Image 1 (cartoon, rainbow, N blue to C red):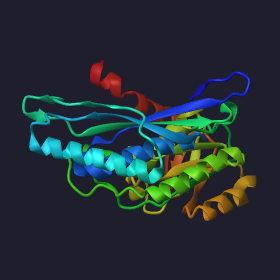
Image 2 (tube, helix red, strand yellow; image 1 turned 180 degrees about the vertical axis):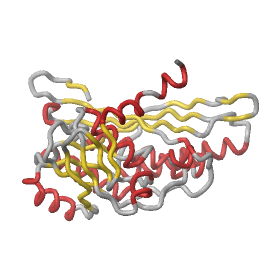
Image 3 (tube, rainbow, N blue to C red; image 1 turned 60 degrees about the vertical axis):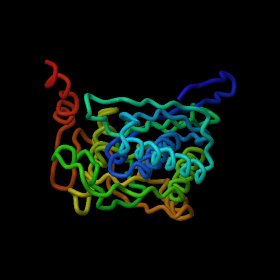
Length: 288
């Protein structure tokens, strides 16, 4: 997010997103899902999505399979932008991304630009105080195909989620209203890694813990169902949030509260110190 006017504090927000695993499973839906995620990221910060750009990356178009992936991706992006009313203002295509005869996964990177009337009122991605209520916007389905969990278990099959862009647009309206009506203290969308990654990033941002209670904890933490956002609100905003969610027909589920020096999920407790170590030691493990 960038402020472009020092007097009015008008700003622009830009997000880029891609999920090659979903595009591999279904390039048509993969493009629409990447578009939806980028637009959702803009709205989670409180800005209104207005325009789209792209960088479409594939292997050799001389391979009929790769050319099919490309054609389906373009069709999906065109249909998605038409449905969401977002113009494509530019973009580029990169072919021949492969090693020998092995092409990369189809990777359409979708960029969305939005506008916010006052950057000072943006919704931050995390909370820095105890006593807030945590809610999940959106329903969680059995969407493990193409997920980080599937990648960790060497699984590359299954059916990718289907983008529900009408619901995404209602969610965008809810997220923007959450900022303008000062309902949200914080908001963070769910993407790769699902709820487990979102909660980790939120509690580590300001070193403020949370206590969460989930049904079907494994699926709840690892599913990557699109169209979901975790929001933190002051308890005094419960009625306002409930009303806005109901008006937009978005499922609302209270999952916990903020506070403490640990992330507690059902009966499992992990200190933020231990969580931060696990979260940041990947590069040192790989590269020393």
